[in-house]
Image (cartoon, rainbow, N blue to C red; front, side, top):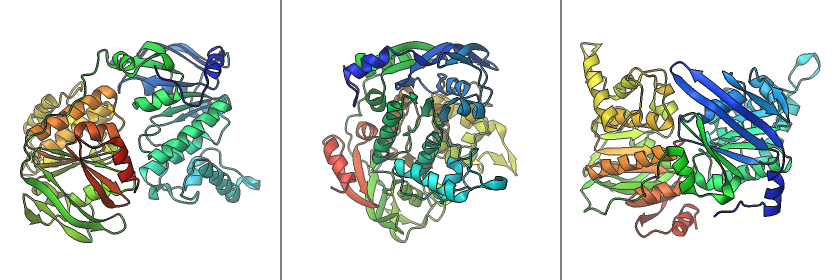
Length: 511
């Protein structure tokens, strides 16, 4: 049994007796051919963190979009502070005190941080002109509260994904909210930024704000929440008191079965060196990095956001030009000046942001899978649809892709299945080296297990895999060796069978 940090049993008992601040009763929502929500009921008390869990596609985001006015329910009622409400749109939701912090960032990149934070409620001077002095001062105070190191006047397009997420969170602090929904808020945050976020959540609790917290990360759920509601296939499968349940029980409710115990494959004799970098440097992003990945092994790359992990991957794949160093494939020095060069040398990259960098969301699953092989699926400038279909059929089956049809736009798939489409796209090029950046970011626990198994199977088949991840359990559970990065340099290399968590944390912290 696990206990909640920062809350005494007396406090938890007192909160448990409070009348619901928010009550969602019997909400049903149907889209063409899909019942997204089926008679869902949920309540949140003042000062409570109520976790909402479920696999991708279980209905979590749909339920929150109904609450925030993005969707209208077919049936059901919503009460706030005991009064029935009907939320016609996001603006009305904010007016009522309901704030949704999206998993998918909804920022205007060309605008400043301050303008994004106060979008829709910009401070005005006489005659309706924006009061920029007040705008930047107010935004600066919010950034200070979040411990951000960037300025209110910075353009959002210049920020990292992690910093953009902090701007999204900052929006919630503009209002005097009654209910705040956090949808995967830590997916892009460093450990230090998570601490700040958790402090913000606890300060909101102290102000009797009700929190709905959506996350796939069990450690966060058991640290923050008082109760957990689990959705599966659009229906509530149970509401549990966090201190009285276990991760195994929550997982069984989420996926309808127990997860197979996670175990790495037994160590195999190392193959030949498939990828090797020596003295690789790129400006201030990373310096003098050297490592190798052998055929048949998974090498994990671990470090804090900003340590240079993604930039190293992008340089190997030809998206960045190195200042110094060399890249070897099968022992031979190769020149990689662009992604086509990397592909020609048998290197593939599944990027960190699958939606922004790995997929064309409006296109079908089949068309996305064939994007990396247009030369082989075209004849005299015309696409060979049968060749495209053969690629899709092969990898949809191999990856156990769950999609209604090859025609389905990838935007309609769950995060785990979108990642499978990305992997199918690159596996079709028959790579010898697969670089996969944050393979399970924003993916539910069941799909994570499938992706981890797939990575191990690819390595067992002789592929060299370089896996970049921010999740320590993932790195420890999937890798054969682990590279620890600190401030753009390789701080240490570990054998995954013998490394301790303490040693890994010390290495990425510069200790």
